[in-house]
Amino acid sequence: MALPAEFHEIAKQVNNWGRWGAADEIGTLNLITRETVRQAADCVRAGLRVPLALPLREDGVQTGAIPGRINPFHTMVQVNQELFGPGTVACSDDAVTMGLQAGTHWDALTHASHSGRIYNGRPANTVTAHAGARFSGIDKAAPVVSRGVLLDVAGAKGLDRLPGGYAVTPEDLTEAEEHAGVTVRSGDIVLVRTGQIRLYLEGDRHAYAFPSPGLSVRTPQWFHSREVAAVANDTLTFEIFPPEIEELWMPVHALHLVEMGMHQGQNWNLEPLSTACAQEGRYAFLIAAMPEPFAGATGSPVAPVAVL
Image (tube, rainbow, N blue to C red; front, side, top):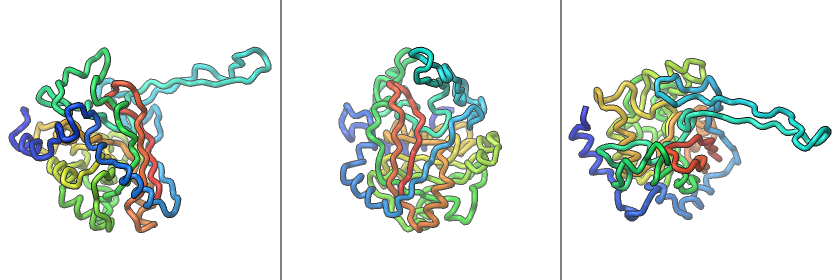
């Protein structure tokens, strides 16, 4: 179906095209300033480091539903090979073939388009099969280090996991913010926990994929009003699956990536972080989440670390 009037109305309200100039390629990452990072460092008290990435493995989260988005295929190209002659130091090397959005990842601003446009009003055809993204590829992302905030939507409701198909609303985000005792502010990286990834961690990647809770089409306005720099969650598609509005696929991707210029992440393992935040009684932390700088890529694996 064509994008409905409701979508276009929200798009007008959250649009950031031209906000940081016609040449801008990083969108809301502009909101991460030196002062933002300095204040983020103040969140480090216990020195507790919490990794948020899933292991990259051949039996990863991908089920084959998205053509070409394959789980990592790992192969050894040399094993204990004495490259410089017998008795010299031996080396082992390996290689990987994978979809860049296969595991824990960031979507670049060029991962989605609509109405023939990508972020900042550029033509969608600036992404090509030959060269990838001419503008706003994942390699253009500024250093992704800021204050992180965990909005544990499931935890705020006393649940281990939200039901499949549940639409996380702006009201849910505010409830989780109050539960955390923290106020989301400009330049923050927000992590939204639904608990859905528990299904994958328990060994059922198909149940993890479908049905899935996700972020409602109404939530981009919430992120826009708080000037969030980037957002990630613990689901395969980020969106509600099946879709919140029948036959309207990926509207939140389009609003975040195209209209707002806000990077979006999926498949983040927020379970250890949820436990650590509850134990520490703090839901704000320093987060480092740099994508791999693949030139022209529309996404990248990431191994984020939260430091409390």
